[in-house]
Image 1 (cartoon, rainbow, N blue to C red):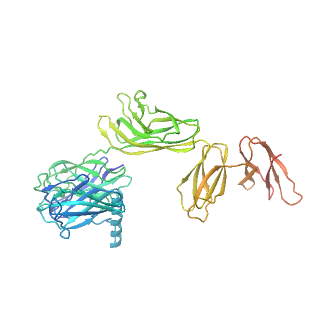
Image 2 (cartoon, rainbow, N blue to C red):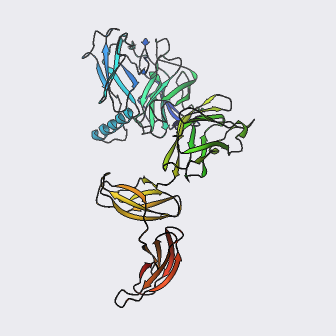
Image 3 (cartoon, helix red, strand yellow):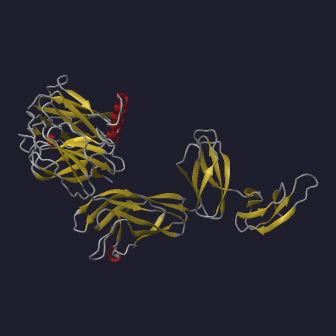
Length: 562
């Protein structure tokens, strides 16, 4: 989820005749400083190649942004001709991942270098590359190829002529109404993302990196760097202006496009306040999780969290074949129309679900809309069955498209005969797993330092439900493998756990249908005197006996079969 927010901009490079105001926005709040002096660019020509964006053009430099695999290193080859035969290597400089200052709170050179290194690693992690070409001549056309290098190889774009070009500005011009914008970009992972800001009457966008010269979730722009559409002057609008901010990069936060409204006075003024509204639209779709046994029927919730009322929602999901059958979509929320609820089987285990509201109503925010019901097939191996969402689309009540920024897949754990074991994240001092199996069966947990063994049994477990979370003993090994198996309960076994100072709980493992007696003794010195405290017949492979009183200083227990 990504949206923009605002605070008062403290940065001010042009102290004379400045005016500052705060724009309060819904979903976006920005701090804007208007100053009386600015210089910058004249863009006379620009070519944007597919997957390449030209931004931040000045008389002496320009920036290129493109997509590439995470971890790649960027470079730019610059030429004086469209055919790419006259290289300008050595005449212009190329700066990969250009930044201004990094984190503004850095107090020394080392911290500044570290913050820049962090931002650059985050940028490439988002699947983005950027490079600044410096040392250019004003009003000159430059042709280029972008290069992405990684251990997998080197990619050059475009590989052949004609090459794309950009023409630098002729000169900087005076801008009376200089506006600076500080935007807060909120999302799951936004540091290092590149954000562009543009307008339909400008030749190019301006671009900045989240966290560069601002907080780790902030990005700073100077709107005076925009050039007018005819390329003859800096962009000098008046009145209310609607700009477009786009968050670049892969992942759920990438590709978000948001309108940003700013009022321009066109002349100097003092202490003028401006208020604007910018609504952000976000839809998050979630499929739930469940555990069921072969032959049983269960369901998972289909939930939505939306910042706007919706008129339609559909999504495509995939279920690996062989474990679930009889899929049905059932309405839960009262605004969902059951007659319009559809679930269509596609090819290769894919399904298309469509959810529509009742006439005159909308799908509301933060609601469980429906449940996906199914049955677990018998006679197959136990398995973790993912419910993977491939795509999702939503429309608002006015039939315009809403942004589905996030979707979380679901999962079904199907228990047949074999147990399943799932590791849980934890601290270095603890190791936890979830054991899935048949209720009222006994299971063992083995461990080994290697996947090939040798294996050692570390725990025997009595399972009363379909699952149980277990804390496992930690050894000196840095890495351990675990496996679960249905335990053999013959010969019988007795486990003891102290409840209080004079009470214990007993757990008896044995053969189903066999009679057993639990016996106790005050000591094990000859002659031993055992006496029965409980006799029973096992209806399962184990039985739990709680609250056995122990009044002696020492008490010994044993399990006896007739």
